[in-house]
Image (tube, rainbow, N blue to C red; front, side, top):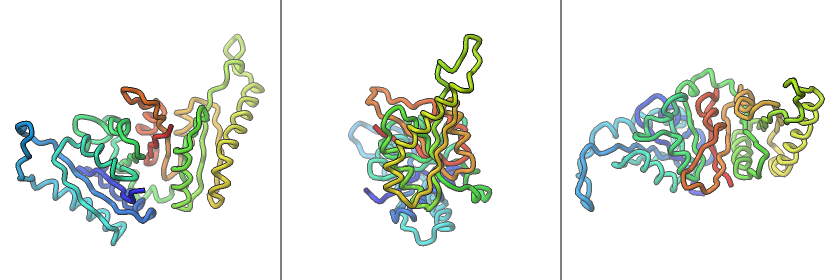
Length: 287
């Protein structure tokens, strides 16, 4: 553990919301908060030559605004500041290697973070190993104070130990319930020749899914006995099932499987969560 939470800030309301979310997480983890802003140099330089020492005034303004937002909600929290003169996406990738978690502002539909000039927040997610949390500005509003619990999407197609570890640890730190959501389409044998779904076949498939989910969660329930766990199986496609399961949650945790692709890929469930989830989304890479 590096005991550092890094948040990329760029002066947008989304970034300030991410900074406040990251500040609470840093407080709960007893970690330092790092505010990072980076900018693409407008002029080039000869190969091997250093950048000119001049720094525009606006990076200081951005980080001071973020620092004030953090101080207003988590006074006295240790805060470090990094002003990085390189493409923001590259700066964030490098910063992720020195942090336990990375937080960014999210616009939902469209580019996930203006901070990542020349790319998107999802480009960043596919390139880093640490969890990435995306926060939208309205998810920082007083209306979100009624949100309770952590929701986690569990696929059951393969082990997801890193995903469940993050979800259970987060729920334990925040002393809130954990809702484990599994979405599964009805099996082919549940449909008759006319395309109608047989109720009995669906019920049998749902019972099997519940047994599999319970078995996957059993060792984590034993390890985190103070975390109240709700198991939720929804017989529909995983993406809409997860979005329904995230209703009323303060954080949605989704997994990104690391398969060693030459070109990293992010599944449709993660895309759906980032674009449509009603709460901040934590994307956790796991084997």
